[in-house]
Length: 430
Image 1 (spheres, rainbow, N blue to C red):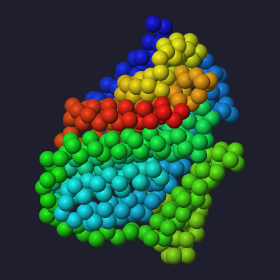
Image 2 (cartoon, rainbow, N blue to C red):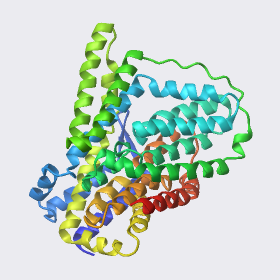
Image 3 (cartoon, rainbow, N blue to C red):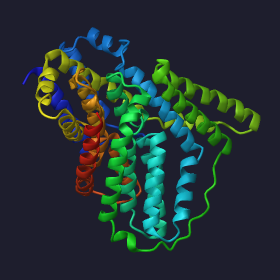
Image 4 (cartoon, helix red, strand yellow):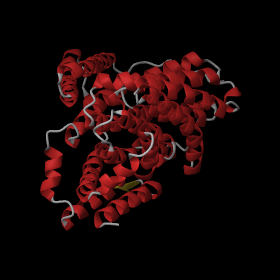
């Protein structure tokens, strides 16, 4: 193994270790994620030893290409801001309350309504936001209703990481892999809607079978009526999100960068919120709270991982791996290997790596297959996606006991039929 390969392998192994053993540390009452430090250390070793010249790294970060990580981060953070803003305005909690109210005393109805609500919201926002928003609410409701929270938590997590495939904005991995191949918003959606619906139908059947016994008990607690915290902010946020989505669809025809559209929309939302709040006589505190809640650890995580990929490209490791993956059915090969790799090194660095492995000729089948793997791979272990790491951390703070083994057991039952359905449909249409 070359020096670059050894450093990259050790970085990934150490990252897995800290995610399993100590994903967060507390300093002066503030929780900090540890996994970005591992990625940053690996990056610094490559730069200090000269295995990756600093000039090449800076050129890769600033180069005017579709895989520029800074542009991708701006796109993702802007879209995330729009989603978090709506959450701070109370829209997600309101919709969750309405969903629970409509279910009445039936747990089967509740599971279906939750699945549909989470799926729909994820399509227009992102899996991370929905997981962060709905998980504490589900834990709270299940405790007060004296029902098992696990069926609802697993259903929420699976639905969020399935329907995040529909649009390019649903997951940062979608953005990275699709933009690396020059795939726009609408061309992406035209393909991915069908594998997503196939996977979504299959996972719903599997979830109903897995939790059929737990759902027999009736709900005895009456759900309180939900109210929007800030109607004006909800209207503003919803209008901006809708407007941004429309522009992203049209960007494929306008040849206008998606990151510019998203960033401009986020900026417009901030400005209009200050104006409307001034007129309406309320303080726009949700702007600050939304900014604080953005996934800032992604920056010191993605940028260093990008250095590892550049070093692997430079040393020829990526080319060797690409040659191995080039044999057999490309859709199946890339779909399965991306799912496995996501659970070895997390789906974000997996996407950065696979963007350099996928051949530029022969169609976009491998790209879409890798996107499927980056989303559905989140089912299998908490390592598979940042959403899984955050989800497990939330469960600990809310007192819900959910082990790594239990996560993997349910994930294994769901991921195989879901992945098979999505890849078979993709293979039929590309």
